[in-house]
Length: 309
Image (cartoon, rainbow, N blue to C red; front, side, top):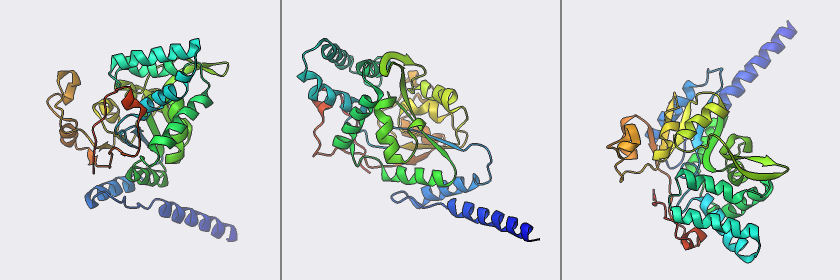
């Protein structure tokens, strides 16, 4: 009898702790309607026994991308502060890659994204992490959206695995994103490359988490359909459609009408398309900090549009 009572008490304690842990905490800065929708969805997942997975895009979804992507700023900052002070063949080769990227101009295109990996080739994982982390501390500290951090904290309380996908070089982002969001660096998936004898190479491992590659990355590395997917741009459409639960779209563009090349988004802005699809549209403040001077601007890379809340 004592053993039965003891076992029963353990079960009750575990149940109470689970219920307490899975209590929704309202997200400051989002409307009551948004919070109610999130709370209802998360509460409905309590009884699930299978993996509960949430996947989010990185730049523009979890932290600010105005006026420039951190991946660009990190590379151009490193070029100006380190490479231009050197007079060797390796530095010259890397600067030539940046010149090619600037000439390309399309910093969301496949060649440009791949050239970020080529630029960093030859450095160790630790060196690349330091470049990203130094840039984050210098120019992006405080740009993580507090609402998204509160959302991710809620998801962890409800037993979700949280994954971050980025088209930027994986090693460049893992350290600072893991620190800010309190998740494992292994759950931050970006553009991967082969590492040989402690040094990164320009040999890219597919898929790159960009456009439809984000959906393929979910299938290849996460290996389950996510319950929640969050993104912000046209490039996140395929990834968002991998969700069999909730789709969350942060600061979607409502100015550019997409064309036939954008498939089902043709004739819509990003915002109007996802409103039609029933996604949860949320706002986070993303504006330029006038006290921060960006190296990327000096290289004349186009700026991202501001999203004041």
